[in-house]
Amino acid sequence: MPGPKTHDIFYKSLKEKLNKKTLDSFPNYDKYNIFVQGHDFLIYYDFYNSKVRDANIENSIHLQEHRFQEFVYNYLAIAKESGALENEDVRLFIGPGYVMHHLLDAYTHPQIIYYSGDHTRNPETKIWNHGVVENLLDIYMMETYEKIDARTYKVYKDFEINRDLVSSELITTINDSLGVTYGINNGGEIFEKAFQQLAPYMWLMKYDYLGLKAVFFDKVLGPFVKCSKAFSYHRDFHDALPYLNLEHEEWLNPTDGSISTESFLDLFEKSLNDGAQIVDELENICQSGSIHRDDIYSIIPNISSVHGLECERPFQLKYTKTTNNR
Image 1: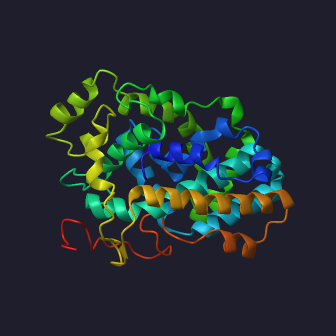
Image 2: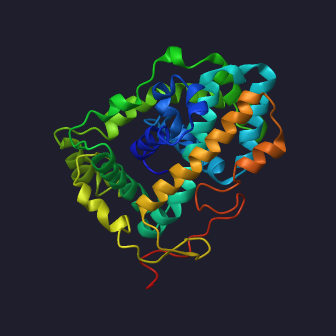
């Protein structure tokens, strides 16, 4: 992903990096923080229905790995043609929202995968270390950036959105651009419902004031569902330290073995700086009303949010901390 709260903190931090012209065009920026959950909305839609969830996870992974530039261009071109581009929510969804979600994932996922040893849940063993690590990173980021106790904070309130803030033009634009780019039917309606289902998901799966959910997830479900520790924020944020690389040791991109010494916080800040420039340039194009493929492609890097390398490149997990001695 990273986790939902890390993306939320990213969106809020991004505001401080954007130029005045961009901020002036987004007077309601603070009200749309949930948009930064990007393609993960497909995961939160009907999360209680395993059959629906598994199908949407596959769609989400497809969005992560394929035709990123093309989707952004199609979205903007469709919005321009329909007149929806004039809507603030339509522009906030794609720039500070969807694109920034993808960018943060692309910058930080390789490190998370390297340290966790996986990306998706193993369907046979039910192990999903990736989710466990991201849950801990969420907790650490809440403690570090927002100075709040993740164990008691009513985190679900950060993910509520007024239905009146979501225009029909936005839903139609999402629907049409997902259909044109990926052949996904009714994608707009899925996102619309997921906007409302995100807060209940955070209440049920993450908020854990008394720590009872952590006990249930770990002790009761744990023997059967090895990814159960990916849930509940009632955990010690110090447990995230082994995955942050604060000592700047060498780690490898799990796909191609390229070397980095950046910490998670380095990558987070790098994403903010690069992301602010992208959002400023993208919003400038939107305000001009002139949407051209070459202009969009020159701004949006065509990278997979899984490994940070070029889209369409197959992901093969070759390098992890446990399999290398660097």
